[in-house]
Amino acid sequence: MINIKLNDVLYQFPENWNEVTLDKFIKVTEIKLDNTEEIERDLLILSALTDIPFDIIDELPYTEYKRLSQLCKFIMEDDKSKVSYEFTLDNVDYIMQNDITKITTAEFIDMDSLISDKDNMMHNLHILLAILYRPKVNGKIEKYNSDTLMERAELFNKKMTCNYAISAMVFSLALGQVCLEFIPDSLDNLTIEQSQI
Image (cartoon, rainbow, N blue to C red; front, side):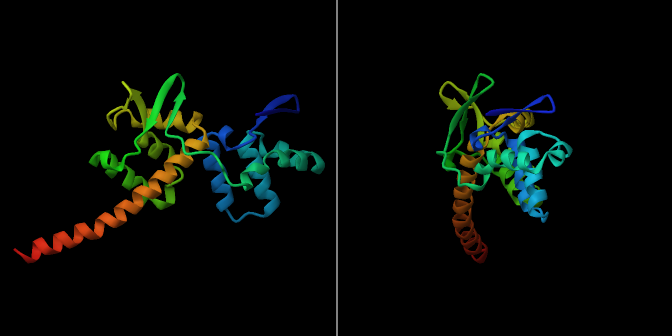
């Protein structure tokens, strides 16, 4: 993180996606999808990444704005971080459920409902991550419990960095591919069983 003082207030600028929290990542992706003018979009992105109020950025001399916006240019570059299946947050070790064959029905149903809600998918990303990443207990992932889900999801939203979200998105795409391959076979079996009745 780079520290910059504006109007006697210290702000932190992330230097890469590993320093961007999930809630800021979601804000940035929403801005990129919006149909705003380029300069306004860049102002909004800068504000979302740094927590500098939009009106303060808007009042900066243009040369200062350009200097600050250069600090956030990493968002236009490809993320080259490796897939991360484990991390520590607030002194708790978390591990990702990355074995498709061990996903429970409850996990699958909850993930499917979040992924299916395309209009709110990014807003639900922290919940999806809380399903996939759970505390590590005796070297294994903690049993899925929907009662502890939202508390962990809120913690992830505020403190988890994007590199773990990217890992989960890669896994979710793989899971989606497996489901697409599984569903036609299941439907074929259902058709065969129905025709035998």
